[in-house]
Image (cartoon, rainbow, N blue to C red):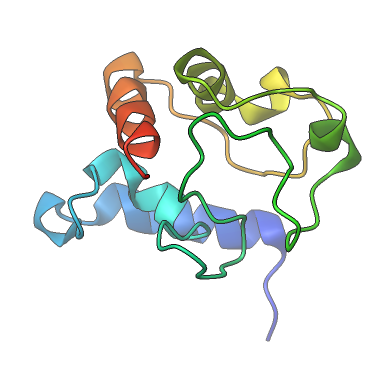
Length: 122
């Protein structure tokens, strides 16, 4: 049985919300749990979404082994702290037409922690 992408994301978000803090691993912030459902942070490891290792300063939609949306390819974004914060607030508002179904991280403190974590992945 195959779930639709929205149903899959709803399940992932529910799991992230109900997962105890102690289950976060690898020094990742708990707020990154929903992200980790689709994105790897290990160099060279593939997942459903693009790999996030080395994202700091990287041009958006630039990994050769991932099929990005035309909107993200045309965005001209470079992943800085400011752009990651904007993206993680609401990917669909940051880049209308993106295929990323994630609704965003509304809590600015949690978002700041996730941005700092992402920028540390070098």
